[in-house]
Image (tube, rainbow, N blue to C red; front, side, top):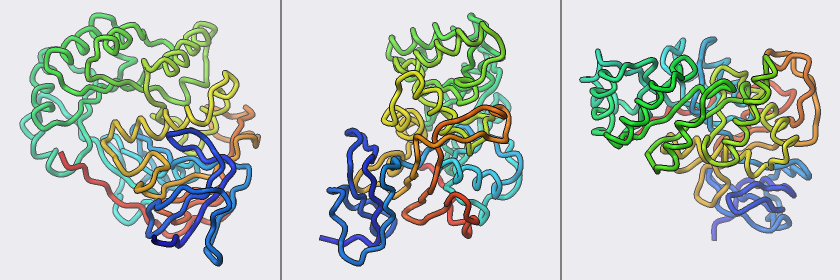
Length: 349
């Protein structure tokens, strides 16, 4: 049996089988054991998280990079995010600049539909379409399915007219194309996706910390509760940043989720496991033997006031203390960022 070269232990390790005291044994960046909390080989380097929770590194599949990859991925690391999938239109070069692992979505329209197979070969994780009319979807959806990829329908808030949402769902059923609906806000009609999930269509949907936490009106307050209920019921499957501050995604979601009785296990399901499945990442998103040692030490009881909108002036619960990417510490509260060690990810279709 191989000995670990590093151990992280906690009295609250969040695994797919539940939360328990454990020591996570790491070797060459991989998790090689999840054992009794006292099982630490003599002389082995260790991070003892104590009562702080140990979660999987978060996977964020809806990231808008506007200030360059160095700043964006540092913010991600500070938020416990170890993998991001960047939306089209990102700025700057990524190679050599990333503190976390980075993959990419590609923009698709009827104008470049003939390039889908070639783009898939380059390793993009899927294809993003905005406000797309039915005639174009009838060309795009079969092309995406042929390369066994996924279509993200973004700008959903702008296309939430009922007949348009019905069109996307109807075509998803017709072509059996994996379809993911982004941009679900408190004002979005959830009924179509509820019926799509009930019909077992290959469709998933997301919401964001901002939409779960910030309300602009009393109507939004009521609709926000529907979003939480949709998450709990599996109608929505994941929470991703969209345009929310990356470093506050987990504290903001945890603050509101904890107030409603949700658990760290559910946070891991919504912010780690489900986004990893969406992107087809099978070695991250969970604390399991054989997975990459992407981990976050998170104090769920700490309180602080962020200085970033849209949470300015609010008191949030939960503080990311340390983040590990393949067993390497990439963030520690109050410490300078180390040299970037994130990889550029390619998906093989």
